[in-house]
Length: 203
Image (cartoon, rainbow, N blue to C red; front, side, top):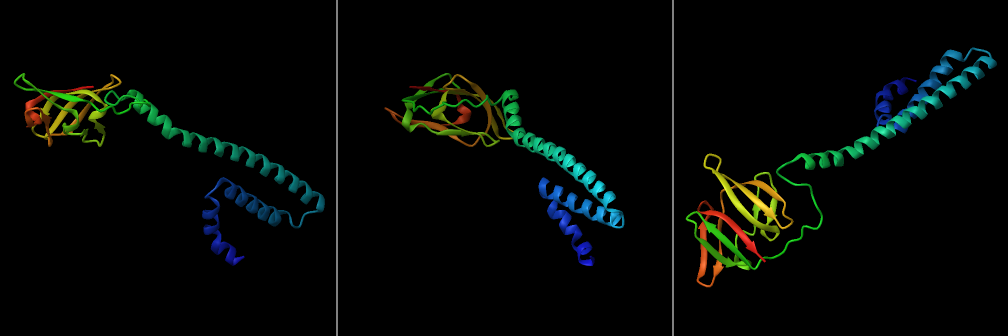
């Protein structure tokens, strides 16, 4: 008995790991209490108490397991529901739609700040993608165009509006640490992004 009370905390901890373990522990404790309180009673009283305790344990166990199952099911479903809810209310990133395939472009038309444009070959254009400060990476093969909306010299970030191939428009905040360019019939072209207003991709 001394060993039982010595290991009782460990037994309770292990039993609490699952609903069935906790239910089994409850049955054992109730059985011990029934034995202690009614061991000197008559057979009829012991039989009657056994039946009452048995019915009580079974009823409580059924309700307990049912409630636990419902809680587990709700917790399992909540991450996806939260993800869908966040996607639906986020104005920056549109809800995910399967089928937004990358389509290589044949040329890129770079509109400069002085209102001039430069056309470069699609397979030579850089950068290949834009990476937001939150970690969202979007390939230029999935863009119809992107426009540089504003620059923040303090944080050294750019606000870029991206029009995707499926016509969705999103806004990213990206680091101001990349150049824009490519090759055309005249040779290499490259410039800092602070001299660019927009880039349109033709297919």
